Amino acid sequence: MPGSPWDPDQYGLFSAEREQPFWDLAGLLEARKGASLVDLGCGDGRLTAALHRRIGAGRTLGVDSSPEMLARAASAAGTEVSFTSGDIATWHGSGVDIVFSNAALQWVGNHTAVLGRWRESLAPGGQLAVQVPSNWDHASHLVLTELAREHLGDDAPPDPVAANVLKPEEYSRLLYELGFKRQQVRMQVYTHILPDAEALVEWMKGTSMNRVKGLLAPDEYADFVEVYKARILERLGCQKPFFYPFKRILMWGSLH
Ligand SMILES: C[S@@+](CC[C@H](N)C(=O)[O-])C[C@H]1O[C@@H](n2cnc3c(N)ncnc32)[C@H](O)[C@@H]1O
Image 1 (cartoon, rainbow, N blue to C red):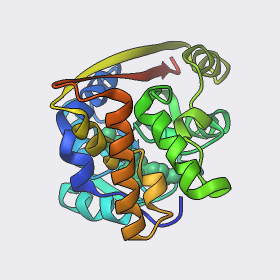
Image 2: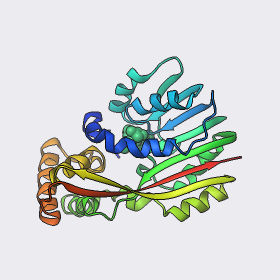
Image 3: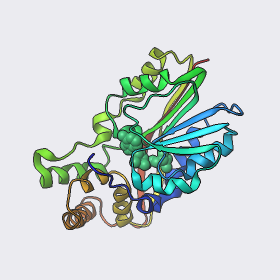
Image 4: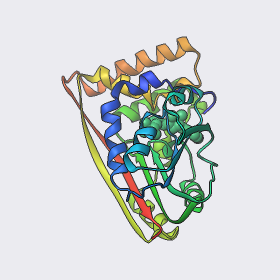
């Protein structure tokens, strides 16, 4: 994705809904006091620092490619928690006790190779915990893909979730092949009750729409959002409140 269209305030509009899978994923970890933790695609770092405290980690590194997110993360840094700019698609560490990544891996391709590198970064007995959305087949995402194609033609970027995210059973096999002796992989439907379908548009502006935002001039993007809103209302109606089911895959593996 060229540039960084991430807006921490827009992303934070639904922080309660977005936080739940983060803590569900964290709940899969077996806490080891003093562990080294790396949070890949850490966003604004608020949850990274909270996770550091919750599991009693010794030192924590958050990695993200968005300057806007990292600027916000600076305020969450401390003596044991730091943040750095990096691409999670190529990131490689060593001797890490816990590699954690919430709602970021879907933005990059080739999960077999990427998760292979993350596994190689683990210390003996290390743990991997990753959450990815899997909601590409909901109208919220299908309409976005359809409109992106209408506006950008062959330059329209594919839905990264549809293009990159594997099936739960494929992640399960991958964790097995990467040598995780114990694992949990599950698909969970998060039920969000939004005030109305317009709130769904605000939700999408915080994440999935970034792939289009990065390719359009600001006025073109504003028009795009208006057309998206009209089509969503036409397709999904004006239910109030708006029931938004959201599928996510949570996976955890331990090397011992
Ligand atoms: C949906 S946010 C999740 C943030 C955080 N993990 C959380 O749970 O609140 C996705 C984050 O992934 C980051 N990201 C996307 N692609 C990335 C890449 N290739 N390398 C590093 N960070 C990336 C974005 O900048 C954004 O901060």
